[in-house]
Image 1 (tube, rainbow, N blue to C red):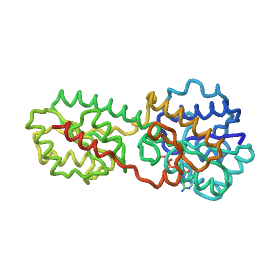
Image 2 (cartoon, rainbow, N blue to C red):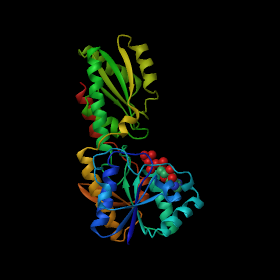
Image 3 (cartoon, rainbow, N blue to C red):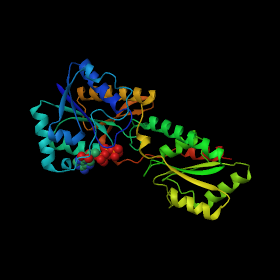
Length: 324
Ligand code: ATP
């Protein structure tokens, strides 16, 4: 291969800039040309390309978001759209791709690579940590720290006013952020999609903590919690059953995806970029780079998408014991 394209797609995550930087510089190191594609698959269809060199990616390792921007492209889901994209790549002499994104991005990459035979390696960039084949997706560690920090701040006001807070964090299908940030920030209870605590047990736990002398409490609720109520419904429910509590709700929202990446995510991004380009040079394709037992490993994109990440059950017990 001679010319590698890199792009970011789907939801952004902290560390994407550091990963682009790594891909660009690894290409320079191996004397490969590197082209950046703006706005993901949509930019590929529109030929929104920019030649990169090692200096084009200075001062971005510490920046959140993605300077190449991201986009959701409906057109890429059509055969005609993908053909347009392929013709643009061909015209520009691009013969390999590094795709940074989540499972949708990888699904598109697999289809595209099969149709046109172009080698593609994926870098998992999403805060949810919901991709099989890596212990950490890019941006997850930063999101944990952001959420932990936000809960610390909410705790200050909760304890000043003897309040109970329900804090909603991201996680429609997986509870990794809720569980880890919840333990890190000392949450009373953590409600996640993978486990149903039950409303009765939630009330019991809140009553018990009240009896044990706690005057304020924080309950972390993943967006897709399994208890059958969202944060606002939970507030009403608790108001009705435990009237002595002054209950408030805080939805953290998109701030969880922003911010400067942690050192962990910057190092991870740098390692993933190197591994992605060197895997292409080794003739690999249709695989994702990931961190497993502190080593960079490859997993077929198909497995990465299809698999389901498990929560760590030990953490449920730790959370339980810590909230005694
Ligand atoms: P996140 O997990 O943060 O949402 P993602 O990569 O899963 O990130 P998506 O919006 O699901 O984000 O996918 C990104 C883009 O990938 C889509 O806008 C679309 O262009 C492309 N894509 C997704 N699914 C397909 C598909 N089945 N065929 C072709 N392209 C697809």
